[in-house]
Length: 157
Image (tube, rainbow, N blue to C red):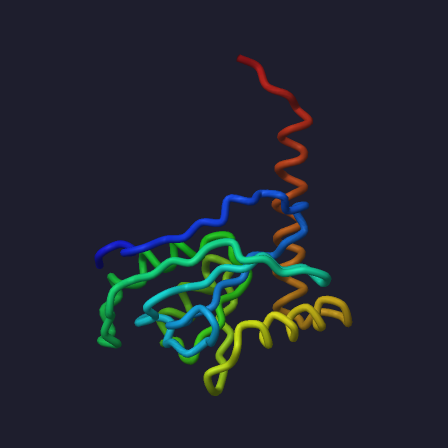
C-alpha cells in the first residue's frame, strides 16, 4: 500500500497530557462515513472531559474493500497511541489487529458528525466510562506513570 498522500499535523503541543487520542474514519473531516480498511482519511483528536482539539489529519488515495491485509499495516501504525477509531464498518481481521494494539473499533450505524461523537465521548468521560473506555484510560495512565518513573531516574551519559 502506498503511504499517506497528505498529512496535516497541528504543531500546538500545549496539551496538558490528559488528552486521549481518538481517530475518526472520514472522507470530509466532518462526518464518520468510511469503512476502516478503505478509509480515505483519518482525523485525529485529543479528547478529555472538558476539551477536544484537532491533532492531525492523514489522507490516503482511493482504497478498495478487497480483503487485502497489506493495506492495514500502515493504518494500524498510524493509530498507535489511539484509544479508539470510529468508523462505519470494520472487518473481523482488522478488529482483531486493532484490539491487539489496544485500539477499540467503534462502529457508527450511519454517517455521524465527528463533533457529535466527541460530545458523546466527553459526556461518558464525565459521567463514568464504559468498560472499554475505562480500560483505555487505565492503559494510558499506566504509560504516563512509566514515563514519569523513567524521567525521575535521571540520565547517565
